[in-house]
Image 1 (cartoon, rainbow, N blue to C red):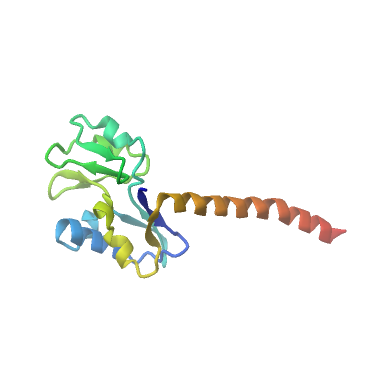
Image 2 (cartoon, rainbow, N blue to C red):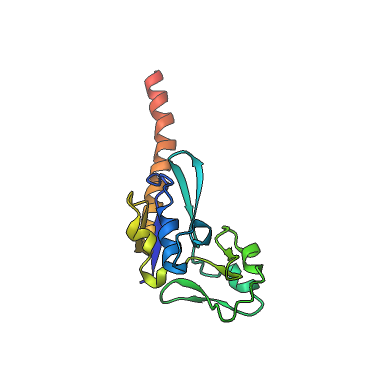
Amino acid sequence: MAKALKIDLEKCVGCRTCEMVCSAKHTNTINPYRSCIKVVREKEWEGVPMTCAQCEDPQCGAVCPVKAITRDDKMGIVRIDFDKCIGCRMCVAACPFGAMNFDAVVKKVSKCDLCEGDPECAKFCFYRALTYVDESELATDKRRAAAKKLSDTVRKPAETAAAAK
């Protein structure tokens, strides 16, 4: 079964450790601008890690004029063939999540490749905001969250009405 990067926004403090280990792994430098994961800071001590969703039907791959972007369905990873990439940035414009990056140093695009199945960001995330889990766990967590939200929406008005009587 394919695995995926799970992002828990409640746990992310915006420390940007994930950016540092990602850039170190992929570029041998500690440079957040060259990282494949980006932390968008909303407020101090709050962050939103943004990374490739490893789409089933990646729009980045659909627009690539040299077919440098493909999906490995077995691993669940969307990959870039850097030998084919011409750095045109069509994929950057096409990605609905803003997860494609342009590395100005090497003049090529970059994106998360889940470190080929062993993501460094998840290993080094001190707060466990990033974890590498089976894809089925993502769906289970989403269902639980949706059920709680629905339950709160339905039950709270009923409890309020009962208390008012």
